[in-house]
Length: 124
Image (tube, rainbow, N blue to C red; front, side, top):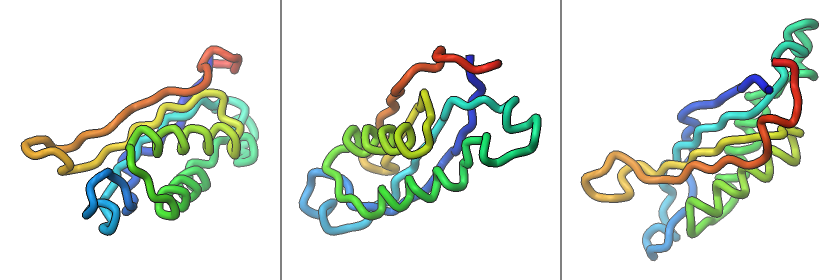
């Protein structure tokens, strides 16, 4: 079993949505990330190379989101999950993408996905 490193409420402004105005206007997107890691290995030596560097992950996700133009939150979530798993070697990731104020009378809408496996190993 793995440990979990997380990033909550990462705010990014991006083009996302299916309506004409959404294709022209940057909107706030909130992203939550949870990633499987072996915290004990990093903690033993206090070695950042053995840790999931959440700052590097956040920067990569922000850059990817800001540079893309998505119609669906589902597409953005899938692309973020694939990026994290590929570029950071994370065996499991949970991605939640939220659009505040997208539906009248709701605080936010969005999607949460999980990709990979938490049970692939680890020392926890």
